[in-house]
Length: 355
Image (cartoon, rainbow, N blue to C red; front, side):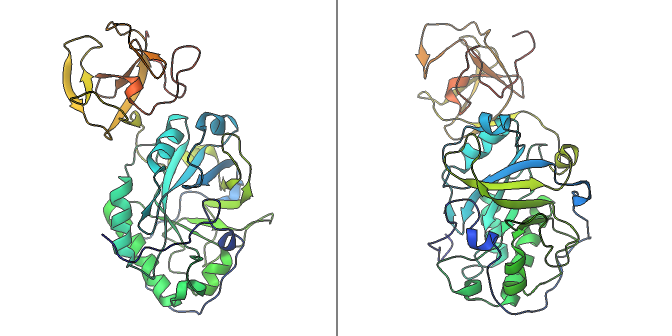
C-alpha cells in the first residue's frame, strides 16, 4: 500500500478550477528529457479543434453515455485515482463511454509530495489495465495543485519535473504509449519551472478557460486536447469539464491505437458457480465460468437464444444474449451493459448478423 494519501483534490469536476484557470506559483529548474526516441504528438491544432469531449471523475458517478454521444461528444477522460484514492465509478464510467461509442482514456492526479512518479505510475497502470484496443486513449497525468497542500504542493520545480519525468517514462516503458500531460499554462510556468523537456515526447492537454485560443506552455508547439471550461452536458447531472480535441475525428481515432475487438463489460452478477459462458445459448453448453468483476469483450448482441425458461432479471428475459469476441455467449443481464431498449436490445451494442 502506498503511503500518505491526500485529502482535498478536484473541486466539483474532473480538473480543479484553480489549475484550469491558470493559478499557481513556483521557481524554475532544469530537467532531464524523458528517455527514449522523440515522437511528436499525433494531433495538431493547425486544422482546428473539431471534436468535443469531456472529462469526469467520482463527482459524476451516474452518466447517461448514450445522451453524451448523441450530443456530439466523441471522447472522455476518466479519473482512475487521485493519489491512491480510487474512483469507485472508474470501470463503469469507462466501459459505459466505450459502449456508447466514445473513445475513453484514464487520468491520474499527480501527487509528488507523497511518492515518486515511477511508484505512482505503476500503481495507476495496475488499476487501469491499459490496452491499445482502438477505443482507448493514452494514459494521462493530471498536473495541478492539490488544494490541501501549500503552493505548488510544497515542492520545488525540480521535484515536479523529476516526478513527471519518472511517471511518463514508466508509462512509456510498460505500455509503449507517451502519456498525455494535463496542465494549465500558469501552473506549468510557476510550479514546473516552464520546463521544455516534454514538448516533443508527450501530448499536451492544456487547461485554459475563457479564451479563444489557449496559451502554449513549456515549448509545446500545439495542444492535443484543450479543456475549455466547465458547463452542462447532456447525460451528465450538474456541470462537467468540457474539452476539445485539436484535430479531426480521423486523427482522434489514430490517437487511440490498436484494433477495436469487442466492447469491454464487467460481470456484475453471477450464479453459484459464476457467470456461465456457453458455446451456444442452450442448456448444457457451458464451457467455463466467469467470476463477478471479470471483464468480458462483447462483439454483438442477439435475441435468438433457445434457452427460454420464463425467468426475468432486471426486466430482461433469458432470450437476450451477448456474443463474446471468442464466439461464446453469456446472458447480457449479468453484465453492466446499458438497459434494454424498446427493440429488446441494449443500445450501443451492435446486433449480431441474423439476430
